[in-house]
Length: 210
Image (cartoon, rainbow, N blue to C red; front, side, top):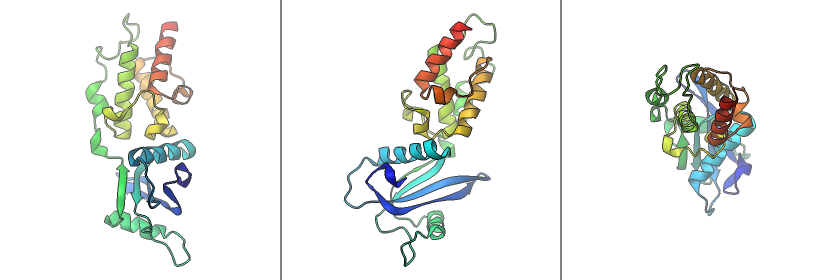
């Protein structure tokens, strides 16, 4: 993670898990280097994307903290347990942060595209299969619901990993897509066609060939 940007202080980060809704979630705490000028929003995005691409795990929370404030031993080693405890107690000196918020998009996908309604996805054999726009909107809604981010944050030309979609979530997305389209979808879809726009174009073309 420290290699993402020079604004991240080397040997001044910690990664640990917390329990959320009965599941373990990844939390990253990282010091910002002093006097570095950087777009913090894009830096948080870059950290999440890097972790997803290299480790195939979604990030629950990323906190950028003040330089010199992460707990260390007298020999300079990170005190991860203390950092964990300070995180839970809200005692870290946070400059900027991103958190996966369950309430941000709860139920979005089902609200926008209810199951079984013909105005969203045509039934098998229907002369009116979904258009590219409908497929795109479906993917946006699913990504929003799965990763708890707003529709406005999603750029259809950004890779899925940019939003923290790990392999497990990618497989689940393909399974839902198969159910929605009522036809087989390659398991490798989100890797072979790594953006919403590319995936929508492929699905439309493969639909036309079917």
